Image 1: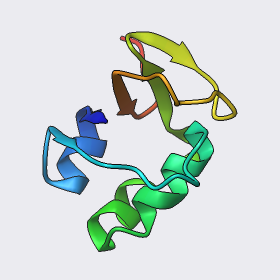
Image 2: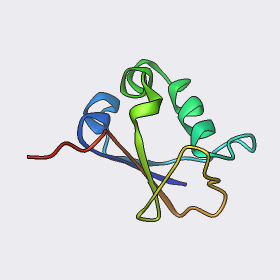
Image 3: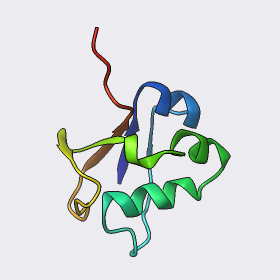
Length: 83
């Protein structure tokens, strides 16, 4: 599964993207965020407040209950600010 990170999520994790084989128990966006936080301190720092993390699957915004089974790409990013 291709994961892409944007803005301060990318900065805190230390990479723009990565390909991961996800365990079978990771079925939803919420599961993915829990799994990623367990990967190390940089992920815990980036995803410390998962409720504010925005997610897009194959370029479409989804909520955290969305299933990820057929996803080609999952993007994680912080809330957008206007200006």
